[in-house]
Image (cartoon, rainbow, N blue to C red; front, side, top):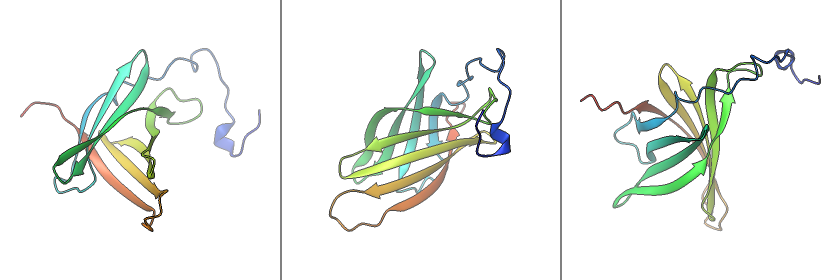
Length: 138
């Protein structure tokens, strides 16, 4: 088995090959910053053991629906069955946004990498925001 770091060298057995439990990510996640000018809400949905993400960002006249995209699930390690995070890509034609999320203390810590592909001369940028699961109790 080839590896680039010692933690990648693991023994895989039948129990380790079980599917990841993705239920921790499913739901409606709200930005913890009520004054955000970026992503306001994440809706993570599970269908047949796969996750998809729908993003709503702040616009001049309400929320902008980015649509739904497939999510790549990441485990806590190469032999772990514990979900640690996800990645996905939104391609808008004029720009691309890579989202990388991790679960930390019941929150999604969302890293956003924005890359402009048009001739606008806008600079690529990075944002990190925190999202909590909307529980509907209040």
